Image (cartoon, helix red, strand yellow):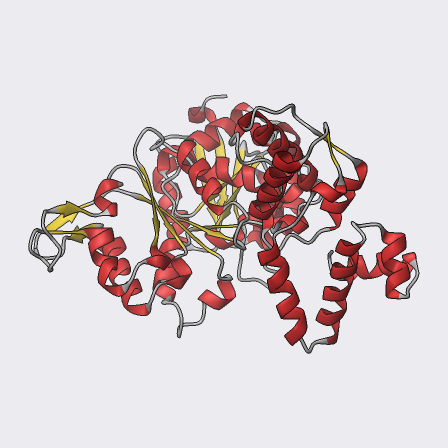
Length: 451
Protein backbone atom coordinates (compact mmCIF):
# COMPACT_ATOMS: atom_id res chain seq x y z
CA UNK A 1 0.00 0.00 0.00
CA UNK A 2 1.15 3.54 -0.75
CA UNK A 3 1.40 6.15 2.00
CA UNK A 4 -1.14 8.32 0.13
CA UNK A 5 -3.84 5.68 0.66
CA UNK A 6 -3.10 5.09 4.35
CA UNK A 7 -5.25 5.88 7.37
CA UNK A 8 -3.14 6.75 10.40
CA UNK A 9 -4.03 7.19 14.09
CA UNK A 10 -1.71 9.05 16.48
CA UNK A 11 -2.25 8.59 20.23
CA UNK A 12 -0.19 10.87 22.49
CA UNK A 13 -1.12 13.07 25.46
CA UNK A 14 1.31 15.79 24.33
CA UNK A 15 -0.65 18.27 22.15
CA UNK A 16 2.60 19.55 20.59
CA UNK A 17 3.42 16.06 19.34
CA UNK A 18 -0.08 15.63 17.92
CA UNK A 19 0.10 18.98 16.13
CA UNK A 20 3.55 18.27 14.69
CA UNK A 21 2.60 14.83 13.39
CA UNK A 22 -0.71 16.08 11.98
CA UNK A 23 1.01 18.89 10.07
CA UNK A 24 3.60 16.44 8.74
CA UNK A 25 1.19 13.68 7.70
CA UNK A 26 -1.87 15.63 6.50
CA UNK A 27 -0.54 16.14 2.93
CA UNK A 28 1.05 12.67 2.88
CA UNK A 29 -1.75 10.28 3.88
CA UNK A 30 -5.42 9.71 3.11
CA UNK A 31 -6.59 10.19 6.72
CA UNK A 32 -4.90 11.32 9.93
CA UNK A 33 -6.71 11.17 13.28
CA UNK A 34 -5.13 12.34 16.53
CA UNK A 35 -6.18 11.41 20.07
CA UNK A 36 -4.93 12.63 23.46
CA UNK A 37 -6.70 10.07 25.64
CA UNK A 38 -5.83 6.39 25.09
CA UNK A 39 -9.06 5.47 26.91
CA UNK A 40 -10.84 6.35 23.64
CA UNK A 41 -8.89 3.75 21.67
CA UNK A 42 -11.64 1.12 21.88
CA UNK A 43 -14.26 3.44 20.38
CA UNK A 44 -11.89 4.67 17.66
CA UNK A 45 -10.96 1.14 16.59
CA UNK A 46 -14.63 0.20 16.33
CA UNK A 47 -15.44 3.25 14.20
CA UNK A 48 -12.37 3.25 11.92
CA UNK A 49 -9.95 0.89 10.24
CA UNK A 50 -6.36 2.12 10.52
CA UNK A 51 -3.32 1.02 8.57
CA UNK A 52 -0.86 2.38 11.15
CA UNK A 53 -1.08 3.58 14.75
CA UNK A 54 1.55 5.80 16.34
CA UNK A 55 1.31 5.09 20.08
CA UNK A 56 3.15 6.91 22.87
CA UNK A 57 4.97 4.79 25.45
CA UNK A 58 3.87 6.90 28.42
CA UNK A 59 0.66 8.64 29.43
CA UNK A 60 -0.38 10.52 32.55
CA UNK A 61 -3.04 8.07 33.61
CA UNK A 62 -4.45 6.00 36.44
CA UNK A 63 -2.45 2.99 35.25
CA UNK A 64 0.74 4.72 36.33
CA UNK A 65 3.08 1.77 35.70
CA UNK A 66 5.70 3.57 33.67
CA UNK A 67 4.90 1.36 30.68
CA UNK A 68 1.38 2.39 29.75
CA UNK A 69 2.31 2.06 26.09
CA UNK A 70 2.70 -1.70 26.50
CA UNK A 71 -0.73 -1.89 28.13
CA UNK A 72 -2.42 -0.07 25.25
CA UNK A 73 -0.43 -2.04 22.68
CA UNK A 74 -1.82 -5.27 24.14
CA UNK A 75 -5.28 -3.69 24.16
CA UNK A 76 -5.02 -2.88 20.44
CA UNK A 77 -3.95 -6.45 19.68
CA UNK A 78 -6.70 -7.85 21.90
CA UNK A 79 -9.32 -5.85 19.98
CA UNK A 80 -8.17 -7.57 16.80
CA UNK A 81 -6.84 -4.51 15.00
CA UNK A 82 -4.57 -5.33 12.06
CA UNK A 83 -2.95 -1.89 12.16
CA UNK A 84 0.83 -1.80 12.37
CA UNK A 85 1.70 -0.18 15.71
CA UNK A 86 4.70 2.15 15.90
CA UNK A 87 5.71 3.13 19.43
CA UNK A 88 6.74 6.72 20.19
CA UNK A 89 9.43 6.65 22.85
CA UNK A 90 11.69 9.03 24.77
CA UNK A 91 15.40 8.44 25.42
CA UNK A 92 14.82 6.76 28.79
CA UNK A 93 12.34 4.15 27.48
CA UNK A 94 14.42 2.31 24.87
CA UNK A 95 14.39 -0.96 26.84
CA UNK A 96 10.59 -0.81 27.07
CA UNK A 97 10.40 0.00 23.37
CA UNK A 98 12.43 -3.09 22.51
CA UNK A 99 10.13 -5.13 24.74
CA UNK A 100 7.18 -3.71 22.78
CA UNK A 101 8.52 -5.39 19.63
CA UNK A 102 8.17 -8.72 21.38
CA UNK A 103 4.60 -7.76 22.31
CA UNK A 104 3.67 -7.16 18.68
CA UNK A 105 4.72 -3.60 17.78
CA UNK A 106 6.10 -3.13 14.28
CA UNK A 107 8.82 -0.63 15.23
CA UNK A 108 9.52 2.40 17.40
CA UNK A 109 10.73 5.97 16.84
CA UNK A 110 12.69 8.06 19.34
CA UNK A 111 11.77 11.65 20.19
CA UNK A 112 12.81 13.96 18.66
CA UNK A 113 12.64 12.13 15.33
CA UNK A 114 13.71 13.04 11.83
CA UNK A 115 10.62 13.60 9.68
CA UNK A 116 11.99 11.60 6.74
CA UNK A 117 12.76 8.70 9.07
CA UNK A 118 9.27 8.79 10.58
CA UNK A 119 7.63 8.80 7.15
CA UNK A 120 9.80 5.89 6.02
CA UNK A 121 8.90 3.92 9.15
CA UNK A 122 5.18 4.45 8.52
CA UNK A 123 5.60 3.47 4.86
CA UNK A 124 7.48 0.31 5.87
CA UNK A 125 4.80 -0.55 8.42
CA UNK A 126 1.90 -0.35 5.96
CA UNK A 127 3.90 -2.24 3.33
CA UNK A 128 4.29 -5.06 5.82
CA UNK A 129 0.89 -5.40 7.46
CA UNK A 130 2.06 -8.37 9.55
CA UNK A 131 3.26 -5.58 11.80
CA UNK A 132 4.61 -7.93 14.44
CA UNK A 133 7.86 -8.59 16.17
CA UNK A 134 8.10 -11.94 14.42
CA UNK A 135 8.74 -10.08 11.17
CA UNK A 136 11.69 -8.23 12.73
CA UNK A 137 14.91 -10.16 12.94
CA UNK A 138 17.59 -9.13 15.38
CA UNK A 139 20.64 -10.27 13.50
CA UNK A 140 23.73 -11.70 15.09
CA UNK A 141 26.82 -9.85 16.28
CA UNK A 142 28.69 -10.35 13.01
CA UNK A 143 26.41 -7.73 11.44
CA UNK A 144 27.45 -5.15 14.02
CA UNK A 145 31.21 -5.57 14.28
CA UNK A 146 33.85 -8.24 13.91
CA UNK A 147 35.16 -7.18 17.33
CA UNK A 148 31.85 -6.74 19.17
CA UNK A 149 30.59 -10.25 19.85
CA UNK A 150 27.75 -11.66 21.92
CA UNK A 151 24.84 -14.09 21.76
CA UNK A 152 23.28 -13.24 25.14
CA UNK A 153 19.91 -11.51 25.24
CA UNK A 154 21.49 -8.43 26.82
CA UNK A 155 23.97 -8.07 23.94
CA UNK A 156 21.33 -8.77 21.29
CA UNK A 157 19.29 -5.90 22.74
CA UNK A 158 22.37 -3.66 22.48
CA UNK A 159 22.95 -4.70 18.86
CA UNK A 160 19.35 -3.85 18.07
CA UNK A 161 19.69 -0.45 19.75
CA UNK A 162 22.83 0.26 17.74
CA UNK A 163 21.04 -0.47 14.47
CA UNK A 164 18.10 1.72 15.50
CA UNK A 165 20.01 4.74 16.78
CA UNK A 166 23.08 4.69 14.51
CA UNK A 167 21.39 6.25 11.44
CA UNK A 168 20.09 9.16 13.54
CA UNK A 169 22.10 12.07 14.91
CA UNK A 170 20.91 11.41 18.48
CA UNK A 171 23.48 11.91 21.22
CA UNK A 172 24.30 8.60 22.90
CA UNK A 173 25.48 7.95 26.47
CA UNK A 174 27.16 4.55 26.92
CA UNK A 175 27.27 3.30 30.51
CA UNK A 176 29.16 0.32 31.87
CA UNK A 177 32.02 -0.94 34.00
CA UNK A 178 35.63 -0.63 32.85
CA UNK A 179 36.56 -3.21 30.25
CA UNK A 180 33.03 -3.95 29.00
CA UNK A 181 33.62 -2.64 25.46
CA UNK A 182 32.11 0.85 25.53
CA UNK A 183 34.55 2.14 22.90
CA UNK A 184 33.71 -0.76 20.56
CA UNK A 185 30.04 0.16 20.84
CA UNK A 186 30.83 3.80 20.06
CA UNK A 187 32.79 2.73 16.97
CA UNK A 188 29.97 0.42 15.87
CA UNK A 189 27.45 3.29 16.15
CA UNK A 190 29.71 5.47 13.98
CA UNK A 191 30.29 2.68 11.43
CA UNK A 192 26.53 2.19 11.01
CA UNK A 193 25.74 5.91 10.90
CA UNK A 194 25.32 8.28 7.96
CA UNK A 195 28.69 9.74 8.98
CA UNK A 196 30.57 6.45 8.62
CA UNK A 197 32.94 7.83 5.97
CA UNK A 198 33.71 10.90 8.09
CA UNK A 199 36.15 11.22 11.03
CA UNK A 200 35.73 9.29 14.28
CA UNK A 201 37.62 11.17 16.98
CA UNK A 202 38.08 9.75 20.48
CA UNK A 203 39.02 11.92 23.48
CA UNK A 204 39.67 10.60 26.99
CA UNK A 205 38.31 13.74 28.63
CA UNK A 206 38.72 12.28 32.12
CA UNK A 207 42.49 12.47 31.68
CA UNK A 208 42.56 16.13 30.63
CA UNK A 209 43.66 18.69 33.20
CA UNK A 210 41.80 21.99 33.56
CA UNK A 211 44.56 23.78 31.63
CA UNK A 212 44.55 21.31 28.72
CA UNK A 213 40.80 20.79 28.44
CA UNK A 214 39.95 23.82 26.29
CA UNK A 215 43.08 23.64 24.16
CA UNK A 216 42.64 19.92 23.43
CA UNK A 217 38.92 20.08 22.66
CA UNK A 218 38.53 23.52 21.12
CA UNK A 219 42.02 24.34 19.80
CA UNK A 220 44.18 27.42 20.27
CA UNK A 221 45.81 30.30 18.41
CA UNK A 222 49.57 30.77 18.27
CA UNK A 223 50.72 32.61 21.39
CA UNK A 224 47.55 31.85 23.38
CA UNK A 225 49.78 30.41 26.13
CA UNK A 226 53.48 29.75 26.67
CA UNK A 227 53.81 26.56 24.63
CA UNK A 228 51.35 27.53 21.88
CA UNK A 229 53.89 27.89 19.07
CA UNK A 230 51.40 27.32 16.23
CA UNK A 231 47.70 27.60 15.50
CA UNK A 232 46.06 24.27 16.33
CA UNK A 233 42.61 22.87 15.65
CA UNK A 234 40.94 21.10 18.56
CA UNK A 235 39.26 17.68 18.58
CA UNK A 236 35.82 19.13 17.86
CA UNK A 237 37.11 20.74 14.67
CA UNK A 238 38.88 17.52 13.74
CA UNK A 239 35.58 15.66 14.10
CA UNK A 240 33.63 18.18 11.96
CA UNK A 241 30.94 16.37 9.89
CA UNK A 242 31.84 13.15 11.74
CA UNK A 243 31.58 11.71 15.26
CA UNK A 244 33.32 12.75 18.46
CA UNK A 245 33.54 10.19 21.29
CA UNK A 246 34.14 11.64 24.75
CA UNK A 247 35.27 8.80 27.01
CA UNK A 248 35.12 8.97 30.83
CA UNK A 249 32.74 11.95 30.64
CA UNK A 250 31.71 11.29 34.25
CA UNK A 251 35.13 12.34 35.52
CA UNK A 252 35.24 15.94 34.25
CA UNK A 253 34.89 18.87 36.63
CA UNK A 254 31.87 21.15 36.90
CA UNK A 255 33.89 23.95 35.27
CA UNK A 256 34.75 21.69 32.31
CA UNK A 257 31.10 20.63 32.09
CA UNK A 258 30.05 24.28 31.80
CA UNK A 259 32.42 24.85 28.88
CA UNK A 260 31.31 21.69 27.13
CA UNK A 261 27.63 22.53 27.60
CA UNK A 262 28.13 25.93 25.97
CA UNK A 263 29.67 24.29 22.89
CA UNK A 264 26.87 21.73 22.60
CA UNK A 265 24.17 24.38 22.95
CA UNK A 266 25.67 26.79 20.44
CA UNK A 267 27.23 24.24 18.08
CA UNK A 268 30.24 26.53 17.99
CA UNK A 269 33.75 26.44 19.42
CA UNK A 270 36.11 29.34 20.08
CA UNK A 271 39.83 28.60 19.96
CA UNK A 272 41.86 29.79 22.93
CA UNK A 273 43.37 33.19 22.19
CA UNK A 274 40.61 34.28 19.79
CA UNK A 275 37.09 35.61 19.90
CA UNK A 276 36.00 34.11 16.61
CA UNK A 277 33.33 31.41 16.81
CA UNK A 278 33.71 28.40 14.47
CA UNK A 279 30.60 26.41 13.55
CA UNK A 280 30.84 22.67 14.11
CA UNK A 281 28.72 19.75 12.92
CA UNK A 282 29.43 16.67 15.04
CA UNK A 283 27.57 13.63 16.30
CA UNK A 284 28.27 13.26 20.04
CA UNK A 285 28.87 9.93 21.77
CA UNK A 286 29.89 9.78 25.45
CA UNK A 287 30.85 6.96 27.80
CA UNK A 288 31.46 6.58 31.53
CA UNK A 289 31.82 3.89 34.17
CA UNK A 290 29.90 6.13 36.58
CA UNK A 291 26.28 5.06 37.06
CA UNK A 292 23.45 7.32 35.93
CA UNK A 293 22.31 7.56 39.56
CA UNK A 294 25.72 8.97 40.53
CA UNK A 295 25.70 11.34 37.57
CA UNK A 296 22.28 12.61 38.62
CA UNK A 297 23.84 14.17 41.74
CA UNK A 298 24.09 17.87 40.89
CA UNK A 299 27.07 18.17 43.21
CA UNK A 300 28.92 16.00 40.69
CA UNK A 301 27.32 16.56 37.31
CA UNK A 302 25.12 19.21 35.72
CA UNK A 303 21.66 17.88 34.94
CA UNK A 304 21.31 20.12 31.89
CA UNK A 305 24.45 18.51 30.47
CA UNK A 306 23.13 15.01 31.21
CA UNK A 307 20.05 15.76 29.10
CA UNK A 308 22.26 17.12 26.31
CA UNK A 309 24.46 14.02 26.09
CA UNK A 310 21.81 11.42 26.89
CA UNK A 311 19.19 11.41 24.14
CA UNK A 312 19.57 7.63 24.11
CA UNK A 313 21.26 5.57 26.81
CA UNK A 314 22.99 2.22 26.23
CA UNK A 315 23.94 0.20 29.32
CA UNK A 316 26.64 -2.40 28.66
CA UNK A 317 26.34 -5.42 30.97
CA UNK A 318 29.40 -6.73 32.85
CA UNK A 319 30.84 -9.94 31.44
CA UNK A 320 29.72 -11.94 34.49
CA UNK A 321 26.10 -11.28 33.45
CA UNK A 322 26.53 -12.35 29.83
CA UNK A 323 26.27 -16.12 30.30
CA UNK A 324 27.74 -18.18 27.46
CA UNK A 325 29.26 -15.08 25.86
CA UNK A 326 32.29 -15.85 28.05
CA UNK A 327 32.88 -19.07 26.06
CA UNK A 328 32.19 -17.34 22.74
CA UNK A 329 34.69 -14.58 23.49
CA UNK A 330 37.31 -16.97 24.91
CA UNK A 331 37.27 -19.02 21.70
CA UNK A 332 37.42 -15.85 19.60
CA UNK A 333 40.46 -14.56 21.50
CA UNK A 334 42.13 -17.98 21.35
CA UNK A 335 41.84 -17.98 17.55
CA UNK A 336 42.91 -14.33 17.26
CA UNK A 337 46.06 -14.69 19.36
CA UNK A 338 46.97 -18.05 17.84
CA UNK A 339 47.01 -16.34 14.44
CA UNK A 340 48.91 -13.36 15.81
CA UNK A 341 51.64 -15.53 17.33
CA UNK A 342 51.74 -18.08 14.46
CA UNK A 343 50.35 -20.95 16.50
CA UNK A 344 47.67 -23.55 15.89
CA UNK A 345 44.34 -22.43 17.29
CA UNK A 346 43.97 -24.31 20.59
CA UNK A 347 40.86 -25.98 21.92
CA UNK A 348 39.71 -25.23 25.48
CA UNK A 349 39.22 -28.18 27.80
CA UNK A 350 36.02 -28.59 29.78
CA UNK A 351 37.91 -27.75 32.97
CA UNK A 352 39.24 -24.56 31.37
CA UNK A 353 35.76 -23.55 30.24
CA UNK A 354 34.31 -24.32 33.69
CA UNK A 355 37.01 -22.17 35.26
CA UNK A 356 36.17 -19.29 32.93
CA UNK A 357 32.43 -19.60 33.51
CA UNK A 358 32.77 -19.64 37.30
CA UNK A 359 35.08 -16.60 37.44
CA UNK A 360 33.53 -13.21 38.20
CA UNK A 361 35.73 -11.12 35.81
CA UNK A 362 36.04 -7.82 37.66
CA UNK A 363 38.09 -6.63 34.67
CA UNK A 364 35.37 -7.75 32.25
CA UNK A 365 36.13 -8.50 28.57
CA UNK A 366 39.52 -6.82 28.78
CA UNK A 367 40.60 -9.17 31.58
CA UNK A 368 39.35 -12.22 29.64
CA UNK A 369 41.25 -11.05 26.57
CA UNK A 370 44.53 -10.72 28.46
CA UNK A 371 44.02 -14.07 30.23
CA UNK A 372 43.52 -15.89 26.91
CA UNK A 373 46.43 -14.07 25.24
CA UNK A 374 48.75 -15.14 28.05
CA UNK A 375 47.44 -18.72 27.91
CA UNK A 376 48.00 -18.96 24.15
CA UNK A 377 51.56 -17.65 24.51
CA UNK A 378 52.53 -19.89 27.44
CA UNK A 379 50.66 -23.14 26.67
CA UNK A 380 52.68 -26.00 25.16
CA UNK A 381 49.95 -28.33 23.89
CA UNK A 382 47.02 -28.03 21.45
CA UNK A 383 44.51 -27.70 24.31
CA UNK A 384 44.25 -24.91 26.88
CA UNK A 385 43.79 -26.49 30.32
CA UNK A 386 42.48 -24.87 33.50
CA UNK A 387 46.04 -24.45 34.79
CA UNK A 388 46.86 -22.35 31.71
CA UNK A 389 44.14 -19.82 32.54
CA UNK A 390 45.53 -17.29 35.00
CA UNK A 391 43.58 -14.19 35.93
CA UNK A 392 44.90 -10.69 36.47
CA UNK A 393 46.75 -10.27 39.79
CA UNK A 394 45.73 -6.60 39.62
CA UNK A 395 42.03 -7.44 39.72
CA UNK A 396 42.54 -10.25 42.26
CA UNK A 397 44.47 -7.88 44.48
CA UNK A 398 41.68 -5.34 44.37
CA UNK A 399 39.13 -8.03 45.26
CA UNK A 400 41.23 -9.24 48.19
CA UNK A 401 41.71 -5.66 49.40
CA UNK A 402 37.96 -5.08 49.19
CA UNK A 403 37.27 -8.33 51.03
CA UNK A 404 39.74 -7.37 53.77
CA UNK A 405 37.94 -4.07 54.43
CA UNK A 406 34.38 -5.22 53.76
CA UNK A 407 32.07 -5.26 56.78
CA UNK A 408 28.80 -6.22 55.06
CA UNK A 409 28.15 -9.92 55.80
CA UNK A 410 26.65 -10.70 52.40
CA UNK A 411 29.60 -9.11 50.59
CA UNK A 412 32.02 -11.07 52.77
CA UNK A 413 30.18 -14.31 51.96
CA UNK A 414 30.15 -13.51 48.23
CA UNK A 415 33.87 -12.68 48.19
CA UNK A 416 34.65 -15.89 50.10
CA UNK A 417 32.67 -18.04 47.65
CA UNK A 418 34.40 -16.42 44.67
CA UNK A 419 37.83 -16.94 46.22
CA UNK A 420 37.16 -20.64 46.99
CA UNK A 421 35.71 -21.25 43.51
CA UNK A 422 38.83 -19.78 41.93
CA UNK A 423 41.03 -21.91 44.18
CA UNK A 424 39.31 -25.09 42.96
CA UNK A 425 39.06 -23.97 39.31
CA UNK A 426 35.26 -23.84 39.47
CA UNK A 427 34.77 -27.41 40.72
CA UNK A 428 31.61 -27.01 42.81
CA UNK A 429 31.96 -30.23 44.83
CA UNK A 430 35.38 -29.24 46.15
CA UNK A 431 34.34 -25.64 46.74
CA UNK A 432 31.22 -26.69 48.67
CA UNK A 433 33.28 -29.09 50.80
CA UNK A 434 35.79 -26.38 51.76
CA UNK A 435 32.98 -23.91 52.48
CA UNK A 436 31.27 -26.50 54.69
CA UNK A 437 27.97 -26.40 52.80
CA UNK A 438 26.13 -28.73 50.42
CA UNK A 439 26.25 -28.38 46.63
CA UNK A 440 22.58 -27.39 46.73
CA UNK A 441 23.33 -24.58 49.20
CA UNK A 442 26.24 -23.46 47.04
CA UNK A 443 24.03 -23.40 43.94
CA UNK A 444 21.50 -21.30 45.83
CA UNK A 445 24.18 -18.80 46.87
CA UNK A 446 25.57 -18.62 43.31
CA UNK A 447 22.12 -17.57 42.14
CA UNK A 448 21.62 -15.18 45.04
CA UNK A 449 24.91 -13.34 44.41
CA UNK A 450 24.74 -13.63 40.60
CA UNK A 451 28.12 -15.39 40.48
